[in-house]
Image (tube, rainbow, N blue to C red; front, side, top):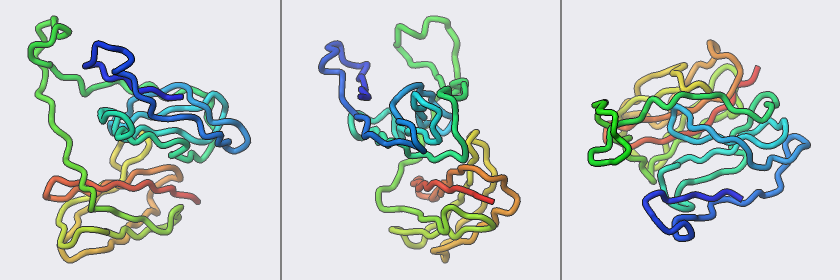
Amino acid sequence: MLFQYDLTKSDVEVARALVGEYDGHVAPNLPTTFFQMMLAPNGKIYMTGTSSVNVLHVIHNPDALGLACDFRQHDLVLPARIMWQVPNFPHFRLFDLPGSPCDTLGINGSVAVEEPERSKEMQVALWPNPAQESCIVELRGEEGLTGRWELLNNAGQVALHGAWSESQTTQQINLKSLPPGAYYFILYSDKGHTAEAKLMVLR
């Protein structure tokens, strides 16, 4: 089982919420039970299994309460098995909280920047997926969008990027320069909305 605790509550039982129970999935032939977790540069939490499996569980919105945190089991399929551990990503996004008893060092850091609002209507679909040489991005749920897009690798680095014009509903992306692996496509609207989709590149 996976529980979430609301640290603003003093009552532990009130603070605890069940957000996931192991669904019995195996990948490719071993159980994908819950083990180590790590907050990644993209703001999501990735979790390994207790066996050498080829998937990761993902908490897409860690700061949302209860089921709204969007915990998805075996959500990210990897090109190879991993041995339990996740990479150690330093958390560079810690900021001062005025009035907090925890901020006692007198360090004045940057002001936290709010992430763009994610539109419930705006969605993107990628096909084919898995892809080899190229893929098509299709915008759904919003017309006349202007903005930009990024394709991130597993380290959170921008592998490809481009613009999205008002007249577009689809766009083809050339993937020939990318190594095989798992990628994240993010479309940023000029209105402050975002839409995301996963992409596997195979050779």
